[in-house]
Image 1 (cartoon, rainbow, N blue to C red):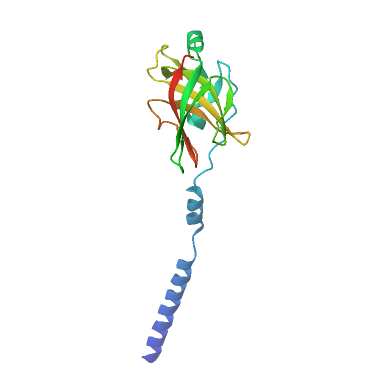
Image 2 (image 1 turned 45 degrees about the horizontal axis):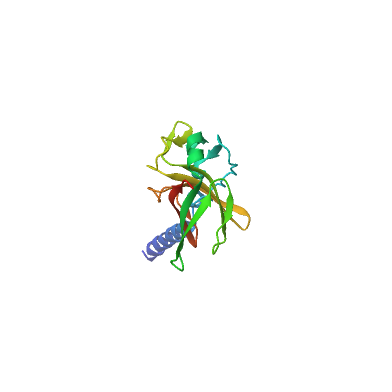
Length: 183
């Protein structure tokens, strides 16, 4: 009888030990699943050269595909500048700047130079074309390029009425479109 109890305990302990050892091991599938769920680094935004029509990736989103920007001649003749609002997050200061369309401008008090590529007073997107419905500021949008230390850190559209759509976000600053200016 004692032999049967000792034999039973020996089998129980060896089963327990092997299940404990197996539970300590991580199956390879679990490791792979964790690696797959790691956030991917954002794709670099391609360089953009001004001059309509132009091809670009909208906000770096590859699913959107390529779009052609068409700025009608009357819009080019009417709108010469844009007003932007720049908010410093740490100091909570806000500044307004007026920038000419088609030029790179250093922004005093920030590490940035900003180039306004396009201004569309009534932004619309259809098919593979981005343009304006008319020359009225009903849905203003400006495509800008932001440089820091000589490198492009962001290229995208700023929307006056929808500032949270593809916003410029930086650890220290936010940039918003205020309006287009005729002069």
